Length: 266
Image (tube, rainbow, N blue to C red):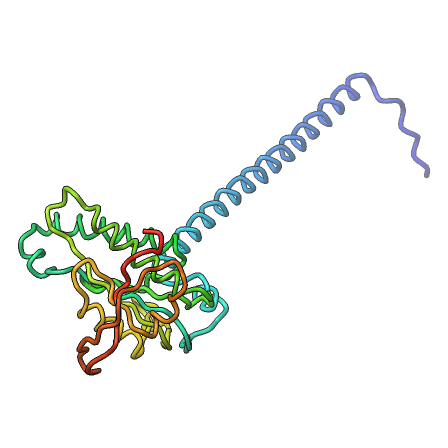
């Protein structure tokens, strides 16, 4: 038996079906809108998280740069775990302050740290300008190396650094202490590398560093004592060097040195 074909729908049925379809369409549109809002919200959240991550990465980079040179950071980031390099020719600056023990006993800790921090901050700025590397401070001692990054004119840079350091100390008027500095300069080979796994540091070792430290000890206040090795690399450049003088260095005996007096145009 065949069914009769359905007759035309009444206006009431059409209206009801239309309202039902309209509600379904509205629900679909609402769902699509919520999905778009969710995607926008996730995109905004993701962008914010990425921005925060980049900011933290930049902070970590700045902190690392206070401890390690950029080239060493890059090597560690590439997976190197043992970094120890021999550099056949660098220039070394070693300095400390005259009478620091007496100065530290006469000042309050807050004043001592404030003035020492000001001086070291000025030295840091000088190293930045001259292109040499501050390696570390130990108490009032300040160690700088030129040439670790492959620079060729590191002797000139280290000499200019030393002169500017003496000049800066001479401009410390109004300080509670009478700050005076001694500096020793020497050139030769060193070994440089990263030591430690926690609180690690980039350091240098070798007889070249030891000689620079002993030349500093043999220097006069606000003077720069230079080995003849380094002085030979400064001759004919823009510096004035004093006459050679033999000084007694611990563990070395009498050693020929001279004094870096200043720039040639001073």
